[in-house]
Image (tube, rainbow, N blue to C red; front, side, top):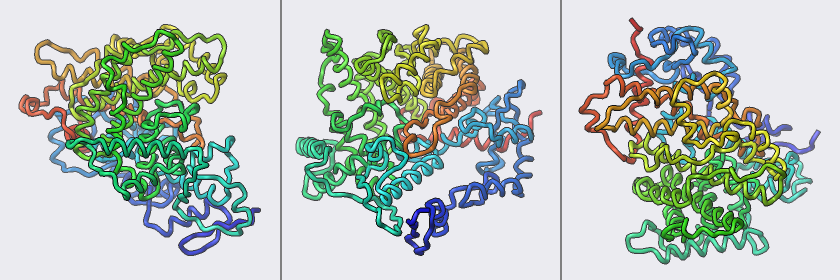
Length: 639
């Protein structure tokens, strides 16, 4: 038994195990993170909530309410929307249910049992019909909203516990690489520094160590500070930068980008943001060699997601400055990037890598400003910066492919070539996804069209997460048997295939291997097509191909096996989890709602004419979501 004691910093009670202290600490605060879905009573522990739900007196009322909801498919797919679990609404809304015809919801005990089944995955289409995540995402602000609140809180608490453990013991017994500790916890490790401590007080703050010239990241810190100072000094009268360089501003900059904070915030970036946007190859990423502008954005995103109070505020003051820094990149000044392509293949790989990195930092800073920036910054990012990003995409080319990658033998040069091209494919996909998301959420005309998606589908996460050329080669060799690799299917070809006709079961099974990122890109492609059809004034249009695509998409999604199904929740593997794209089924259900609404003619002409386009807020789509949730709860029984 260990002689160390875990000491509560509030009441000084000693514990022999960290999990006991963690449970005890909940008694000192008012946090009750678990709520009964039926009566909204809150609990500090999940098992207590589960026991309560079995005997909750509101349960009978909720089940009876289900009988008023319309049924989904006659074929009995077990899709359901139990809106009684979420909110109470004005019963007058029930009279408007005709606005959303054929948007089904199950109404029997079997569906309710299915809804609470242990076998039901959190991202199934049945649970997606609640639109719970989209209701939150369209009404909240911040980078934190790319994950549901429970998941983000769980991951943040896990990292805090890990930091406390490292602070106490000075090492991580589970880490295979000492450098991995710095990536996760972002703190310096001094082995045996706590060896003689008989007891330790848990302090939630992180030790901010003073940087010195011997730190490997010290030169990067100086380089970043120099670049930021230069961009502020060169700002024009109407610049987006509001800061003036002064001793206090310099001090804030030095604190934010101190070597230890670079490590710490990069740790938060990989753990709390990267699952939402796996476009950078983490195993080969080197902060000492990465472009300083890219490093800047990654650090600020990590700080915005930090579980420590104060980190986010320190980072947000630099949003406009770092945006200007990113878009001052010389690549944006080139008249035509393709005209400068070197003829030599080796040079072409590095040329491509630099432009992919520029596109990555552009995507990240646009995402950052859209969720964390001021109203002015959000508008600027959506209307102007986004257009510059799409221009860069077209200069780089959308026909990214592994077609020239031979699967003969792994080597470092082979792996390097795969990494650069896969980063390019993934970054292009994410730019298209954000373009379609802006269309869906802000009613803005898309700047990219589905027919442009000539790139390969993204390779499986196992290939991109591989830590060596051999590991990557093994995973890719398994992928080569898929229809995507065999037929060299582009993303646009996959969209066309699912929209042409109802797929046979064996094709559904084969397409279910495509992965969550590709599935999300598919459904956002359908949203882009829906917008175009919705706003067609001259030609007759039909939603039949889109409806076919949506039907096939739902079948494929329910057949898929999530890539992170067997990935444990621990600090070393969070970065391998699936983030924002796991909610793709909610985008699918929202698309079905929009199509049903348009086809029913329930959207009055006056409403269409008064529709807002390219608005900064997401009030309209949030209103549609909340309207659907209310109607689903108050729908009259079918006649």
